[in-house]
Image 1 (cartoon, rainbow, N blue to C red):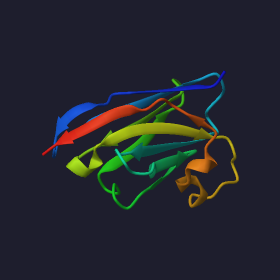
Image 2 (cartoon, rainbow, N blue to C red; image 1 turned 180 degrees about the horizontal axis):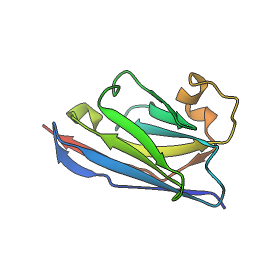
Image 3 (tube, one colour; image 1 turned 60 degrees about the horizontal axis):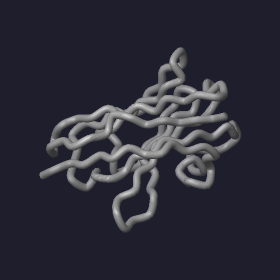
Image 4 (cartoon, rainbow, N blue to C red; image 1 turned 135 degrees about the vertical axis):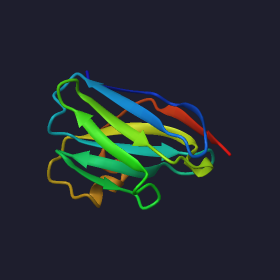
Length: 126
């Protein structure tokens, strides 16, 4: 059974940093594209970034502030969030796609991912 579990969320002041983790189990994830999405209250879930093998791709809103990395040995993907802003407040989700033929454009879409975590809340105060 595939399972994704996010952790590391919390309350932080604007300008500070947080690192989210996504621990994967139940299947070999070394070839999976791992995406991060977020959903603020009353808004649709939106793409944050993704990592496919060792290449990353980010939404313009977070480019230069957020960094995705992965630890293959521990089946874990990280989202390092620096210079956080109040508008980054949302529930953050990680997701996995095992379709290796998807382009990065396709990987910005929620429907491209098969497995999802339960989400972790990030709140940035001003």
